[in-house]
Length: 159
Image 1 (cartoon, one colour):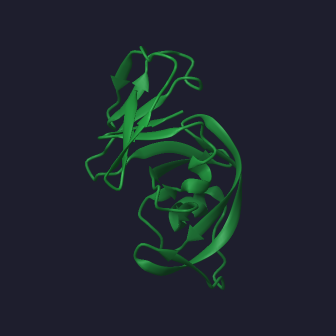
Image 2 (cartoon, rainbow, N blue to C red):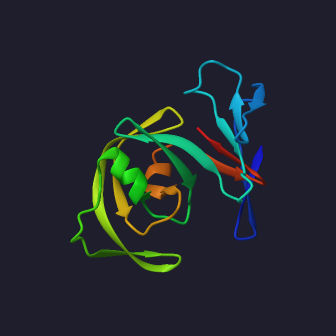
């Protein structure tokens, strides 16, 4: 049994299968299963020094480092990542998106193939923000395509 705290409420999650996989820490504070079948094993990620959980991903085959953001409805690419992938925002785009810091300029793009930690999530709509966050964000439209996302204290587990 594991727990998830949401707004001060404890939610219990039950699993019928015991978890006995050996785990090892990486230099960037991620916990990785020692098993070789990575796609079937849960990935445990430790909270980074800045308080965020970071995951490695790819958009259209180009690597992207994401901060997991359960408060973001959609995947958000900053300008640098969007340019590397070839999803740059047109200069005349004036669509706005509401963020925690207020409204920001953005442009919709479609990632034809989005992957997170080796898990293929398929095509996903992406907000490209020229004045966006320092680190691109993995929002709920991508997280919802994973089998499970669990937060327990300072560990985020994805499967």
